[in-house]
Each structure stands twice: as C-alpha cells, then as structure tokens.
Length: 227
Length: 391
Image (cartoon, rainbow over all chains, first blue to last red; front, side):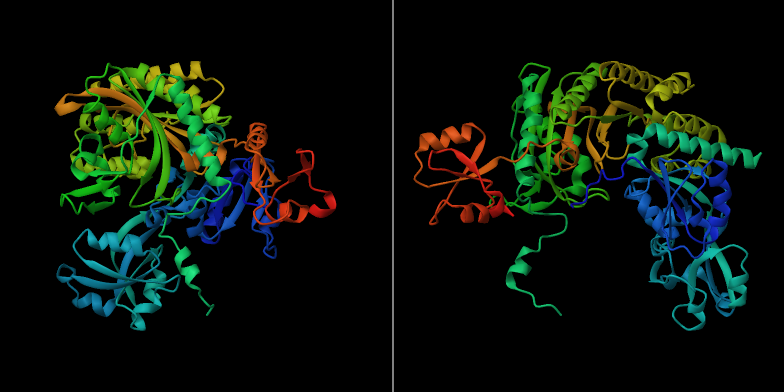
C-alpha cells in the first residue's frame, strides 16, 4: 500500500531523547499525567513506540539529534530536545515554546592544556575542530572571522586532540571532569544548554487545541517545580 | 557496482524536480482548474504572465524579496539579465500597475501556473510547483483580506478539502514593536529570528525584561483563536502596534463568523515568508497535508511609485493535492480503431475513455494488457472483462 500522510493522523506523537536527558525528563512527563506502557521501562524491550494511558497519545524514544528531525518533519508532534540540537539543525518548522530547565550544561570550545599556555586566539585565521556540532561551530567562528574546518564525530571527541586528529574540540560540558581526565581545558563557552519542549509548526496550527493543552500542562509542571 | 544504462542516467532529474505521471498529472490539472474556476465564478479575470521576464521588472517592488530564490539567465538577444518567476503574485501586480493601470478598481485577477525556485524548503523540497491564486488590487483593509481569504477557503472546499486550518498573522506587527522598543536593525532581526522559533529564553537574552514581557504576552495569544482573540484585545501595546492588533482582531472575528466549520488560529508573531506583506496576512493548512496549502494577505503595489493597497492569496497545488478529493479515474474501454466517431463520442459523453486496439484484436487479452476494465462487445456496449481473465 502506498504511504499516506494521513495514516495514524489521529495519534499525537511525543518524541523523547534516549540517554542522559530521559532520566530528567520522565518525572516531568509523568507529572503532566502521561504514563507510558510498562515496556518503556523494560531495558530488554526492543520496542521503539509506546502507547500511554491516554489513548490518543503515543511516545517514541529516539536519539536526541533525531528528536529534532522527527518533530521538524511532522513525524512527531511534540518532543524534548536540547537547544544545542535545535541550534545545530535550525529547522524552520521547529518551534521551542518552553524551557524545561533540565539537562543543563554548556557547549564549549576546549583545547589541550599545553596548547592553551601559548595560544593567542586573536591570530587565528583557520582552525580545525572535532565536533558533533559542525554547523554551530562554523557559525560561531565565522562570526569572529575565523574559518573553522569541522571534523564530524559522533562521540569521544576528547580523544581527538591527543591522537592528533585536531587541536581543538567543541562539545557539551557539564562538570568538566571528562575534559580534565583527557588533559583538555575549556577556553570558551559558545552557548548555555537546557532542554526545551519542541513542537512542529504545522501541528501547532492543524491540531492547535490538543497542542495547546499539552504545552500548558508542561508549562504548569515546570512552574510548579520552579516554585 | 550495478550496471548503469544510458536510460537510467537520462532519467535522473536535478534536485527538487520531478515527472508527474498518471494519474497525478491529470489530478493536478483537474484541481488547478477547479480552484481557478471558483475565482472566475466570483468575478476574477484570468491572466497569464510569461515564465521568464527581465530581472529588473521581476525583482522590483514586491518582487525584491524574491531575488535569492530566482534563477537567472542572460537573454542572448538583448544581452540583459532575465529571471524565471519564483512567484506569480509579483507578475500579476506588475500587470495591474502597467497594462491594466487604467482598468477600474478594485481589479480582480486570477492565475495558475508553474514557478521555479532556487531552493526548496524543508517540508517541500520541490523547486518547481504549480500555484493557483487571486489578487484583489486597489482595495484596502480587512474587507479586502477577508474577501481573498474566504474565496481561497471556498476554492479549497470546492476541491474537496473538508477542513481547512486558517492561521491569521500580522507580519508588520513584530517589526513595529521592535521599533517602539527602540531596538536597532541588527537586534530587531535577531529578535524576529528567535521569535520565529517561539524561543522566549533567547528573546529574553536579546532584549530587556520589560520588552520581553510584551513579547511574552504576545506569544501567549498564539494558538486557537477563541482564546487568542480575547488575550490580544486585552494587551497593552505601544501606539503603532495597536492599529495592527485591531485589524487582526477584526479579521479574526469576521472569519470566525463566516466559516465557523473551519479551524481558526492566531499567530501574531509569524512573519517568515511574508516579506512583502504590509498588513494582516494568513496561512492555510489542512490536516494530512505536509505543509501549507496556501498563504496570502495585504500588500502594496502601484505604478510609478504610486501606492495601491491590495490583497491576494496563493494556493500550492502539490500541498493541496495531498488533501483534495480527486475524481475517480475515467473507466477505460477497449474499442476498434474503426468505431464510428459518433459512437465513440457518445461513449465519451457517458464518462468512458476509449482506447483504440491498434494492430490487435479487440479481445480480453489486449484489454487486460492495456489496463482497460471493459471491451466494446458486438452490440457496441461496454462489457466488463470476465473475472477469470482479470485474475
């Protein structure tokens, strides 16, 4: 059968990121009254899509970068994503109406301690950087007149300088202990990162009442936690 | 490696371009004619501008914002630059301001045709697509916007779209607010960019707390109109924004009264893609369609610097086709090529498409091979293929 964009159009789909942020996000999700089916918490389950106690709402669990993509293309209607991911893709169809205040960390430039001792950033014209965030990195350095050649890695950025892949990295830093353990020092903060509730622009129009309801619930939960 | 044949290489099209095959090509033509027929039945006259024209006329006035989306070629005859249209609105505005400058106002024009863009968008990677639209030239205010909006919605209804989501916006509102808040151009642009993503945290970083409070209050009016309108009315806005807010509210009330069976939402912060609009504007969405079905609003055009208030709406056929009801394809009947023309036309008048059996017998096997559901029997009547043969 041919793909029909209307298939399953009745279900509202919420995309949640795997890993670190999920542990902080789930208390918020549960506080809005959403409870995923038991398989969600079963580490042995290979299921990717989960029903909830609300018959009209499903949850999907995907990689954090993919949350933005699923929501931007309307495959999911709401999601939770860090503003690092939002900035990297800069999807015009993605909106971030609410800061959930979880997953706080920062996106930073780091280099080896030895390099830092003799480095003068004012003299740079071209640098090579290993990062998961090539777009943000390029834009950040371009804004101060430096051409950044980005080597895209998907993890273990901290290894790159010691092995000679590059001399600098751009990565998420929360406590800085991983950097220290690898002989790196943070030299510049590009952005402060927290997780946001993201929504699809078209879904905001076409399913405005449902979307407003869930955004309001998340907003109330966040305010209650902040108070 | 797989073997590649010359035909496979020839079949590759540039990004964002595609061949429409049966039955899609037929359906697109059908829906386009339905839409324009609705405009024509309501007093709009069809115009047909050329595909390509001199760059300076295509990209002047309201067209100046289209420069980055326009393909250009050199005219080998005049040695002047020409641009391929990326939007037909500006061409129709040019016609109204030049050749039809003396036609009585308000001037009502309708059009349909293909446009070509340098880049597709995230949701619609197509670089070539068909537009159908209408322009109401020389009419101002919410009456004009309401006329084109409601007519666009009616055309969609005629094309079988059951439920349209109408999103009302006011593109000049945020720039007016930024000016009233005393932001310089660079900062105002940054504010507009982050507002586009509804990212209040970033807005707060860019402007002071007081300004952010105004924008936050405005952000809370985004959503279903039934609650947004009241919130918008209650807002305390600086002077130039008040008139804009009032006309947005007036339009919302009018549309809600006229088409209560469709969904109405407000988004006073939306401005993306509304670069040449000067007053209230709108986007149309449909449940099941990937992106916008169409958009439009108030803008200004005019001959030789004279400003003429206008309003228009454009529908995007590729998106409309996702949600439009298309007629069932014509039933095919296999006939002899020598069938008298009168009999053939009679069959066609009954809704049949007649397929001549060229160089083959008028039999089950040939009918099946050509995808016909019927063959013409000895009595000259269409007969369904025997079930055994169809299996």
